Every structure is written in structure tokens, then in C-alpha cells.
Amino acid sequence: MELPDGTNKNILDLFRLDGRKALITGGAKGLGRVMAQAFAEAGADVAIASRTLSECQATAEALQAQTGRRIYAAALDVTSEETVRTLKADLDQNFGAIDILVNNAGINIRGNIEDMSQADFEAVMGTNVTGSFLCAKVFGPPMSERNWGRIINLGSILSVISMAGRTPYASSKAAVLGLTRTLAMEWATKGVTANAICPGPFATDMNLQLLNDPAKYKAFVEKIPMGRWGELHEIAGAALFLASDAASYVTGTTLFVDGGWTAQ
Ligand SMILES: NC(=O)c1ccc[n+]([C@@H]2O[C@H](COP(=O)([O-])OP(=O)(O)OC[C@H]3O[C@@H](n4cnc5c(N)ncnc54)[C@H](OP(=O)(O)O)[C@@H]3O)[C@@H](O)[C@H]2O)c1
Figure (cartoon, rainbow, N blue to C red):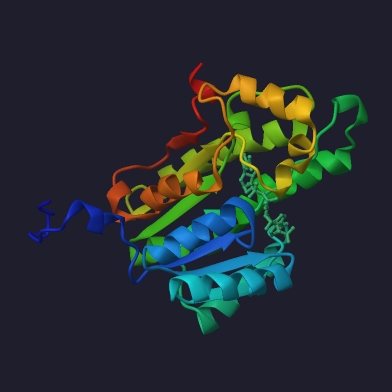
């Protein structure tokens, strides 16, 4: 592959993340942990941060042993601008500037609107939307100053379709796509891309309620053209692509990783 600067690179090298530093919010478990491992295997150093520091530390230790890359654990509540800024200062001092931000931290509170409190609605919006906004606001501008950066926001199939009992989650994940497109516009000429990944159902802690109910589990499977839930590792390729130089002309878009659910 001949590049504009005259160098030649194997296409697979464009997917490597050597020399990059990534921050994955909520990276201690679930999809975030899989993406953290993938980025480290591709050559990046990775910071993972959530409200449960001990969980981040245990995951960091395991991934560092597995991949040989530096994995940094930190505490973070994405709903608080103060803790996001505290994390930025900590990373600047002890880890390095962030090139790749994955806004993965998310929560879901299910229930019909009659039973949904304003506090529950705002908690989901606060984590899924405000949290992604705050992290982009704090970590995006330095990327723009350095003329290279990647922001990946976790949407959902519920960014574009919905089902009963999901007012806060579907509202929040639809908003994540608006946020993504706007960030893409703001930094389009600065080498910073912003894209969303919209997963279908994956077996993580977030979905224990569905996984533990055979009828609900089956109802989900029946809606998926591939006839199965996603395997955790199946999120990694999409994330790595969007984080890498292979996706240098991809911004403001959404990649569905959903077994064909939203194609119907
Ligand atoms: N699994 C799926 O089927 C699926 C489908 C579509 C979209 N998604 C999206 O994918 C992302 C990851 O989901 P997952 O299934 O991997 O969920 P998960 O296993 O429940 O992990 C969520 C992570 O987010 C962290 N988190 C929650 N609130 C936080 C806060 N205020 N500040 C910092 N970290 C916070 C959690 O850690 P603490 O609780 O310790 O803070 C945890 O590490 C979410 O955005 C989710 O909406 C998942």
C-alpha cells in the first residue's frame, strides 16, 4: 500500500496501534475489557477506568501479563466533570497523553415509563450521554492540538430501533449518535475522528436480567438474523478498525455489530 508520504506499508500494519495510548472508560469488564485487550495486542498502552478501582486494577494486572503492554488502572465516574479532569491530570503525569478515547462506560435501567422515575432516567442519560460528552470535552481538544485522535462512542441497536421498557436507554443511545456526528464535524480537519459502534446483544453483566430469563433470551435470539448473541471477541475487530490508521477517512459514522438485527 503506497501512502501519500511516499512510504509503503502492508495493509495489516495500518491496523497496528504501536506508540498509541488509549483510554477505555468502563474497561474493567464486559465489552470494554475485550477492547482493551485488543488494543494492547495491537501495540497500544491502555488505561482503563471506572468507579470500581479494584476491578480496574485486577483487569489491568491480568491484561498486562497477557499482552506485555502497559495497562494503567484508575478510578473514574464519567458523570462528574471533576473526576474526568482529575483522571486527565493523573494520566498526563503518570501515563501519557491519550490518542484514543473509547466512551464505553454505560448503564441500563429497564422498566415501563409508568414505573420509571426521573432519577432513573437522568442516571442513564448522565452516564451514557453526559459522561461521553465530558470525556470527549476533556480528552478531545489535546488530540486536536496534536492533529491525531480517535473517539469511539458505544451506541447500541437501541440508538436506531427500540422496544418497550427502554425509555432512558434508547433515548441515551440515540443521543450518543448525535454527539458522535457533532464531534466528527468539530474536529474533521484536525485528524481526530469520532465514530460510534452499535452492538446488538452480548453476554455481559449489563444483560444478566435477560441471560437469566430463558423466555427473554429466546425472544432476543429470534430477532437476530444470525440466530445467536454476539461472542465477546466479536466487538474487537470493529473497535480496532475505528481506532487505527486503517479508518483515517471514516468519521461521523456508525458501525453496527449486531448479527444483522438492524438490517431487517
Ligand atoms: N452488552 C451488550 O449487549 C451491549 C449492547 C449494546 C451496547 N452496549 C454498550 O456497550 C458498553 C459496555 O457495555 P457492557 O455490556 O460491557 O457493560 P458492563 O459489563 O455492565 O460494563 C459497563 C462498565 O461501565 C462502567 N461504568 C458504569 N457507570 C460508570 C460511571 N459512571 N463511570 C465510569 N464507569 C462506569 C462499569 O464499571 P463500574 O460500575 O465499576 O463503574 C463497567 O466497567 C455500554 O455503553 C453499553 O451500553 C452493550
